[in-house]
Length: 279
Image 1 (tube, rainbow, N blue to C red):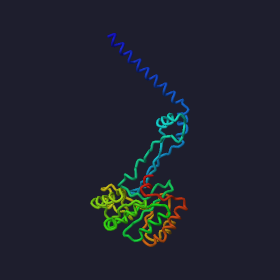
Image 2 (tube, rainbow, N blue to C red; image 1 turned 60 degrees about the vertical axis):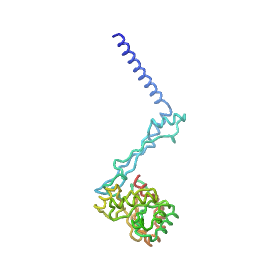
Image 3 (cartoon, helix red, strand yellow; image 1 turned 30 degrees about the horizontal axis):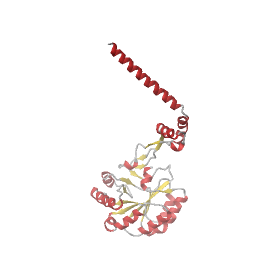
Image 4 (cartoon, rainbow, N blue to C red; image 1 turned 135 degrees about the vertical axis):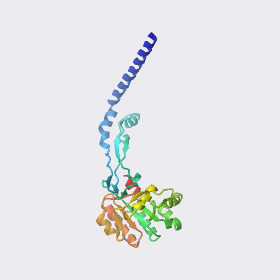
């Protein structure tokens, strides 16, 4: 019995010593100037998450936030021996609704709190595509090209040309059937090593959106659709987060340069659709 009591007392002493030591270490760390600076300055660089806006079946993506990771920041700076704000570590906080994983709503634009926009090109034939890509290259911007399935079958070199110029390629389809998506997804993977991610709409179509959901493709319904005279339409309707749909016609060739110039002069940055949505 005495032996058991001694074991219990020894265990309590060891446990108590551990708690005491842990408290001393924690107090010492909390009083470390490095930790004090992290706690004082770290929150200044945090960014609050902005939640997505959903109205009926329309969605505007949110923006991820960032919160200081005190322990990781301290560990990195302690190794360096001093406080250095460039070594601050942040954890990303994603919105409750993640746009690129949402298949039930139409995404109509990027978030309005950022000065970014995206150009999406509706490519139904080979006409003017090379000129459009050349203009984009000259202006140092890229777009997302929704290419008709017939061009995947008959003009695969054009698809390669679009992708190799820094643009993203997606499928243009009236139905987005599972068979169709699987077929052209395989072709795209072999051609560019990318995969299909989006369906494009010019108006709401629930049956088509249902097919997109079955194939795990995100539905895009641009808030600016330009069939002709793109410069005037963009000039009137441009806003933060705009997704601008553009056809491959002669008017586009004539007005694309001035349209890009107008967008940038208004302080907007043209980025790829996938980046606009991931904000």
